Amino acid sequence: MPIKKIKAIIQIFRPELPFSAGICVILGELIALGKFPSIQSILFGFISVFFISGSALILNDYFDLEVDKVNMPERPLPSGILSPTEAIILTGIAIAIGLIAALLLGVAALFFCVLACAIGILYNWKFKEAGLIGNLMVSFSVAFTFLFGGIAVGDPWNKIVWCFAAMAFFIDLGEEIAGDAMDMEGDRKRASKSIAIIKGKKFALTLSSSSFGLVILISLIPAVFRWLGASYLLMIFITDVLIVLFAIRLIKSKASQEGRSSMRGIYLGALVGMLAFLIGQFFQ
Image (cartoon, rainbow, N blue to C red; front, side):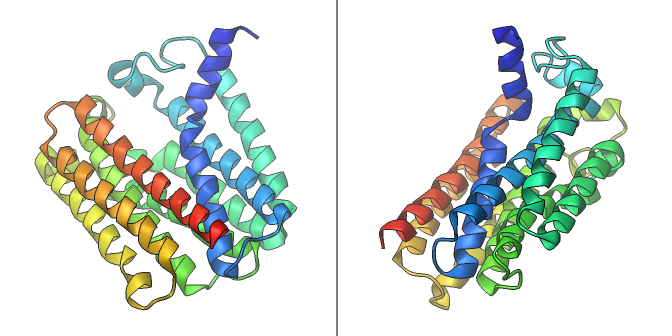
């Protein structure tokens, strides 16, 4: 296989995003148990959500082909490096790997992964242009990564897991709304009902920043009630500071590229914070 095509497969998979989702699953397992889970739970939980998340991202590019010809013509599909058929094949392979890994964790894990797949397919197929409804579907899928961690270790109703899930929900909701504000030109071509198109870019970015503000408020709950220790305090300090800095930069952004850079900073900032929490738990 040509190097160019391999690079395109990696690009369309966007491994940093599925990797973040996999880390969230491990965090959910860790939080639910109060200790490090088994290697089997870590491995199968990570693999399952990594590939399910990746499949949704590939499918996103498949259905966004015409829009990306305007917004991001350098992407693998609009550039012609990968064909739409190859994208569907890659989606099927990723889903199959994800569901097999989920089955190895149990029937409940498999059921919820099938549900996550269904939401991903429906969103990309029918609800992407639905505005806030579509945003909420994606945000639920992201929050599900933490809940799946609890499911994987048999404790899906853990209150701290749900707190982390809520933070993930509002981080992604803020990014979804901001992302629509960056994609207004292409979205008009597909009659999208995004908040940015209906209410304007400035309103959308303000609402996005408000969602990030909710993340910060929710992140304080485990600290206030002393559910977690010093490693969590380190995590929320790193995460909240980066969220504030990049949210300010986002709301002030003039160009789409500047806005996308700020969104990426928020996402990676949250990932750094989660990794700091994992490391803290490992060494405590």
